[in-house]
Image (cartoon, rainbow, N blue to C red):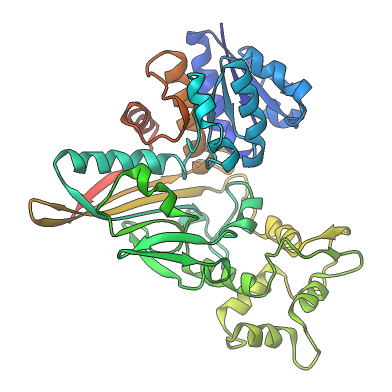
Length: 442
């Protein structure tokens, strides 16, 4: 019997666990789910005889390493900084590893040792990063096969709220790890635009509010996503003049979030003793309020907008002008803000999210300039069975099955899924689960 270790039973794990447990009887798999939360594990496995719960602290080697040693393959849905613990165990015990997170510097440093061991550490195997790499490279390789020369590549992805459940002025609700929203864009962004390397600092990340049209949905705003330049060599598009990966949001979200950034409310470097303080007193301290005008007018002046500007009403809707008492403790502004958002942006059990991904490419073929758009829109079934969980979890589950059943020869080293041997079978199966891209030329 082959054994799979899944590390993490949080929001994004439900489809991954269900997929592997569904395939377990015919493949004679044992699926171990390890997490620090016993109830989170039980919700996902619901007494399935092919599942085994392991309530552990993933940072505790004595608890973690025996599970890695038992397993034939490890799938990690832990926070990005936790993968390295599993990776070191996998190298020691000669196990393949799959994660959905960006390749960290620590993981990258392991590449030679992983190759020498003949192992696969497949990272960025989720949605974005993940499905974006697979679908983009499928298109790029098909263009290159007919001697096309790619001159522009833009890729957009957003985890959004389904239109029928969009009922707040921010047009946003949480469908993934809420903490990630606070740190979005912290490192700034780099991309290639018309032949020039462009850098955008965090402080200006959300201010441009440029638009992109998505068929059947309308226009969305975008902001550049991390360092696009690191993928230039991997995507192998030497003639490209524009190369950018970006995140989709509604225009109002970007305007509102830029206001929060400008006011310093997303900072994780400051600390307040919140005991006895309210959201209003926190906001006053952060923005240097001096009692000369009303607080909304003061904030409007700080943001260089009119007091009746929509962004002021968006901040008001969050409750930032309320005299509600803060939870006691020492917190950064980002943590205080997160407490606000957890309440205001939570999804009701029956509400649905939506994942949107769109690639836009321009290429030259036999003297003609051709524009190609490839788009995917997927709605979730409910808060728990979300489109985000489906698109993050299924690619990892499918690759796990392919490797264990020897349907593919696993690439060695610390990799991401840009190779045809991986993306062809994974995308074929994803289509059977309704994750389908529609291409349009012209």
